[in-house]
Length: 89
Image 1 (cartoon, rainbow, N blue to C red):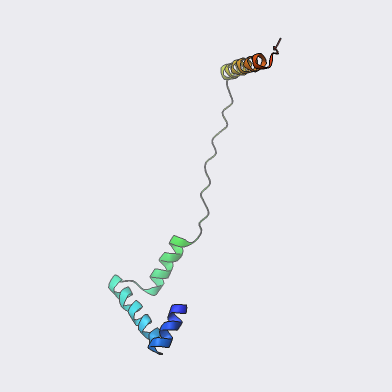
Image 2 (cartoon, rainbow, N blue to C red; image 1 turned 180 degrees about the vertical axis):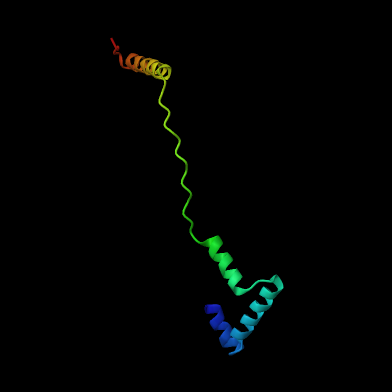
């Protein structure tokens, strides 16, 4: 708006009309109307609700997986016990 106001001051009262006429010419070159430009802008730039992500069913761990994780935990605890001088027994 500052530029339009400044242009109005330097170029006189016809500045706004010249700006409008130039915009109309550019739209005609592109074969578009004001309504099409506004509708396109609204569609592209408006906030859209994100699509919900499908929830994956929670896979229950198998017994084998639980045993493996327990063994890994035991090894980690034994290493911790050795570093502190204590044992799990």
